[in-house]
Length: 116
Image 1 (tube, helix red, strand yellow):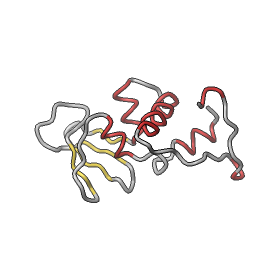
Image 2 (cartoon, rainbow, N blue to C red):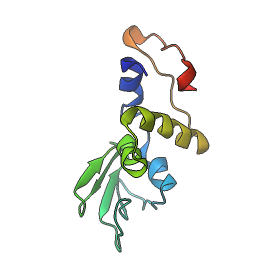
Image 3 (cartoon, rainbow, N blue to C red):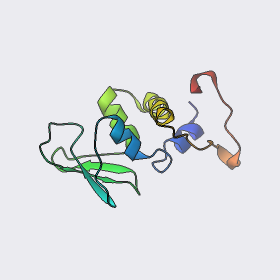
């Protein structure tokens, strides 16, 4: 995966966090800062907060703050490159498509065999 593609796809605003959390079984309560049960430890109450405007997740018990790709890295044990691909699969399964990726000078990044 090229650096420019990784930079654009890795942008927290490009990959929405809510569908990723819901994919892993989290139930988001409505509001700006949404409370959820932690995805990383057995949680009896909602100790994590999700900011859907900034696309970040933070658990006050675990002291873990991650983006949507970070959640995938931790849950599936993937590196960032593979986690970006997995995020794309999860979002496509949810009916959400990522916007067209652009490289330097706002030119489209050519598709490669491993991007599909």
